[in-house]
Image (cartoon, rainbow, N blue to C red; front, top):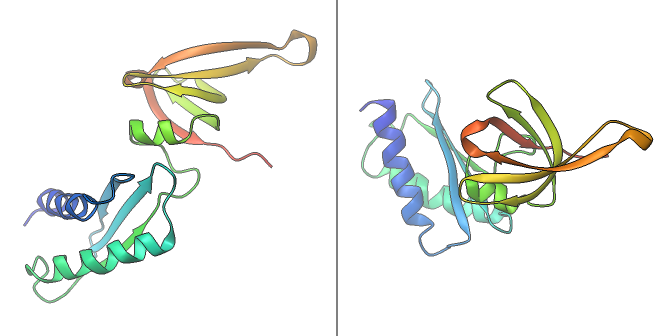
Length: 156
């Protein structure tokens, strides 16, 4: 079975496990050459370690059962994406409204500002340019199609 087929099967398994928890969602599945399966979950209101452990136990049993890995030659990690990891889904943008975001656009421009809204096709950010009395704050609408990568920034 090819890696892509394995990823699709595991995504289907995870989505079935999350069917009764509509506030949780699958962000991404990665499989390393060593058969280390990494499943990244998130929730509209966050996700706890306990939630990840429950999904891990159920998913492990499902992967083990159909013998996707005949010799049990796999490892499984279920977690939430770490802070600073790129946002991959529109639902992650919605969850992070009002947070500081860094957006790298396809044209190479990098914007940092507050995420004000996340729609179906674009995000709206408040970006301040300049310093002191020359500072200017603008609201910019950025289509998802123009975003190369976006990540939440932590202020200290």
